Image (cartoon, rainbow over all chains, first blue to last red; front, side):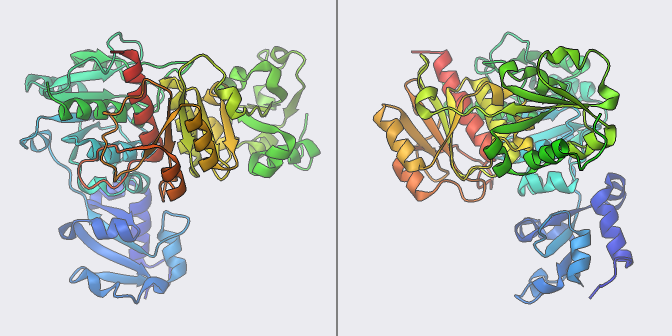
Length: 260
Length: 260
């Protein structure tokens, strides 16, 4: 059992929890809690850490050949990112796709393109809702919040394992690439005239969602072929970014459920 | 200028920030930031507090007859609920409606009924999105997170001033009351068979949204006349509560925009 926070493995966990750079270099990320650890694809789980008071109920044996370490409760609390740790966390290997891989399936593409989304909860919710709506994948600009940030991972509720995603260095270029493949890209902008429920999303479709504070950049809007607006009553200036993404994705899902 | 955190006004601000009970007893709540303070209905603003480094640019004079106090920067940081305080906060009078008041307008009712919503961000987002979708009002069970919690207030982005809301002691009774007034109440439940986009919300409508962890209670589901399901692809077990609310409200708004 590891009882000291100066243990090298503990220090490594702390780095991986706090620093996107450390995660990127190691190709690993932290997941916490019974459900999130159990749902992780077994071939991607690198190491498991269990708190001393959580050991017992077959917790260790269940992981087979994956290395398991026991941490004292106080050390576990230190490495945990949550207020009330559930006593189990795993280091999971990162698995990012390429745009080509995301588009390789047979489904008519329904993509979400995120420009500089900054709030971890928003990105997590976008993945969770995206899986529910049946998206093909999520494309992110390089300056989007790190998808392996523990707060993002938690907010995905497991969708991070199942929704394919990729990061692109140049978003406008990626949008051009998608357009060339026949995917119609819609920028969500509050000042546009086309109501989002009046465009047809039954063909290959991508939605662009911008940063929480500033919306989409001019370049991204120009790169997108089309623009839609989510109507807002009252004095609302904008919707929450993940809410806007959810409304667009579910509108596409609605149209695809009832063809004709 | 107030420079001590043991000043009675400062202590009072801290109580009002932290305790729902203190807010209820005083009938006041805290709002922070330039935009949120400026948007507050003037007749409801009781007191304004400005940090020493924020004073100057006509900040004090602009409040007219409303009492303004200057706080030293360090005292302001103590009372502020945000990481990077904007230097202005106001005490605003609570203004809750009755169910009857909410229904007194001419609009065809579109209500949101919340049972035991616990996450401040979710409640705030529900109000913000609800205003955008054009809801008549929001009805909350008594065990819903305090709507005057600073985190809720911030997440509403000002909608707390504009969307009418009320708290009811007995939710099932309130649902019965609404049904008796001809409002069709839809419980959102993932196991139901009716797709939420296939019900007709152009008449008087209310949507019931349950607690983040446990969903709606059996009593609430039974009290509601109808049930709908938001289809979910993949392995998603549920959507975020505010996302579910947003999708339902915007589907109603969509149907109401295009009659026939």
